[in-house]
Image (cartoon, rainbow, N blue to C red):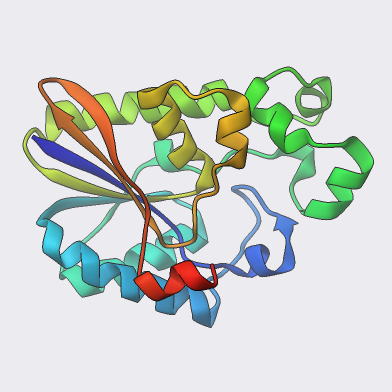
Amino acid sequence: MNLAIFMRHGQAENNVNRILVGRHIESHLTEEGRFQAADTGKYLKKLSISKIYTSPVTRAIETAQIVSKVLGMNYEIDERLYEIDLGKLAGSDYDDVLNKFGNLFLSFYTGEDQVLNDHGVEPFSSVRSRIKNLLDDISTKHDNQNVLMVTHLDPIKAAISYVLDLKPEVLYRWHMRNAALTILKKEYDLWSVSTVNLMGVERYLYD
């Protein structure tokens, strides 16, 4: 048995300001985001983590640094955990995109919107493929070990989609909270979803 533990980065400036920054625009953790990362780290101490991988994006690295300090471990960057490439939409206001193009965020999961293609947005199928590749790799390299991966909303949704084969509408409605854990368990060569959005109990009241 081994666990693949996905952790979304803590609250970042772009989350508060509702700006689509993607993978190339800098956005740092807020004070609340740093607290969230440290708080979640306390739960991770109980899971016997063997390895930490993180997305190369600043807000993920800052989260990984906090968690690594709590766990007394180093981390390694893995580009398969990257945020999606938002192409020409990077830097846009979330609500402005909705007003101008309609609900592109649902269309992202269906893969059927020409606007996304025209703006160079990475397809969800691509995100799903790289996360599947990462899970396959972990199964080989870290058999019977628990691995933490610090990443972003859509790579976590991709992991869940890979295991449960969810419809686009369900993926769209399922929100991954900042610094929350989604845990996959592998038994008898099959991944199952054990936990989604695990975080401090008090956070369920306001997050």
